[in-house]
Image 1 (cartoon, protein in one colour):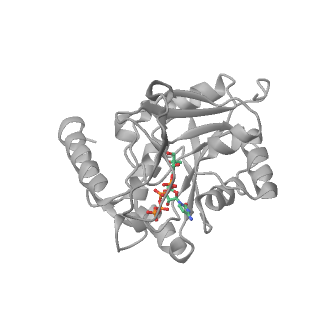
Image 2 (image 1 turned 90 degrees about the horizontal axis):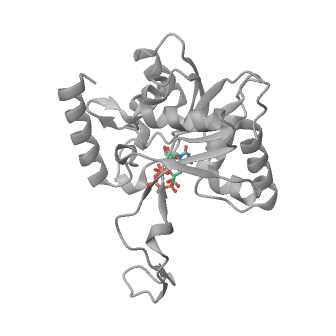
Length: 248
Ligand SMILES: Nc1ccn([C@@H]2O[C@H](COP(=O)(O)OP(=O)(O)OP(=O)(O)O)[C@@H](O)[C@H]2O)c(=O)n1
Ligand SMILES: C[C@](O)(CO)[C@H](O)COP(=O)(O)O
């Protein structure tokens, strides 16, 4: 649980060091354009739009860290937003760790947000921050699934895979970011993983292994992750609609 006697200060760490292999050949995914602006800039702005976030740490692809610093210098952010850039690691988990390592001592809670989710609405960001500040050690935005999910015995690509079971869909959620944490809890989870060696595909998964309760709050359809080429088509359409209707 967070220490309720300490004043809150929330940072956002944006892992942006992935290559974007599933999106196809090109620049690292975070640097690819969405509506003419790099995806990373959208993601940074999405965090900075929340008045609760006063520090944003961008975890850049190591070879492009200097380029990322220049890029961020070219795009205005609110005056209240402090910005740091650090080089990332081989895995998302290592990149998040690199971001956590540079957070100053007055930070009490942290959001971890994929650069690959450039269009998360500010209301979702604010809801995650609020839930953490209200005392939840780990908060995850998520949506119910549209598809039925099968557990399979993974086989070779293209070969039929035997079905092992069908989890009850009503109990499943597709999780998004930003995931919000009491900083001390998330650091403890990363330390524990570093010792047991087993990675996790999201930060909340590491906290779950500590035996700490993680709670889910409603996510948003527009917080989807740009992973494959079709996701980029959808992101362009959402952005164009926002620009036409909200002056976004
Ligand atoms: N070594 C890594 C790998 C991923 N990420 C970041 O983690 C987020 C979620 O990852 P994903 O969407 O899977 O991105 P990639 O790893 O780039 O995608 P792919 O697996 O297709 O290469 C992205 O913002 C990505 O930049 C990171 O910071 N460091
Ligand atoms: C953190 C995440 O976005 C939550 O859905 C997801 O787990 C990242 O997955 P990936 O392995 O980077 O595709």
